[in-house]
Amino acid sequence: MDQRKVVLIGLLFSFWGALGQQTSPSLVDIGKRFLGKPYRANTLSVGNPEQLNTSKESFDCVTFLENCLAIRNAKGVDSLYSKALKHVRYAGDSVQYENRFHYFSDAMIALDYPQILDESHVSVLPKDFTFLSSYLRSKKLPAINIELLEYREKILAKRPFQFTAVGNIAHLLPRIQSGDLVAFVTKNPHLDFLHTGMLVREGNSIHLLHASQDKKQVVLSSQNLGEYLKSHPKFIGICVFRPIFNE
Image (tube, rainbow, N blue to C red; front, side, top):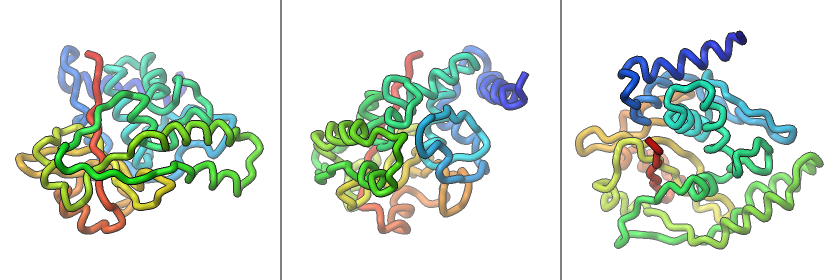
């Protein structure tokens, strides 16, 4: 058997074995198993033919979340893991560059994860979601169907982009649960987010579990969410999404 598959099987079953076969570990439990794993940008292909990357050795901020969600959905069953990963990474579960969720907003909509908001403190920002198609047109890569990417971008652009501004984060904190996903909003009108992670509640304090470009590894931030945002002024707000699992 391929050594990478042996490692994957061991990893999947270790989550369940540690807590008992009848108990599913939480998303946070799964994420913490990756603490210390190195951060690596551009872990997925830059064009077709797209390959399903199932590596557990390094992550960017999105692939960290994708793998946590896939392991949770696979429930420790190795044969279900690849299918689960395709589901959280690709539209229609089809491994193709154009079908990948290049915008985190696209993934959250397709997965039907509800956005957590305080209705009295919602901000709206116009987003045209043209970042990727514009970038790729300048590269002139013939293997990529840019028209299909533009079609997906236009669908996203039709939806109102709602978020919680930095100044209103305190109103959202009581609604946050451990395991909620967070995406950090950019003011760039062509792009939705600059970073993603998982939120962990420790009493009344909310912390960020993420593949950190600054720390070069998966970390649980010692700063609370408010402190983290103050130290990263390029983020103008957040969107919080709650994963739903079929038990």
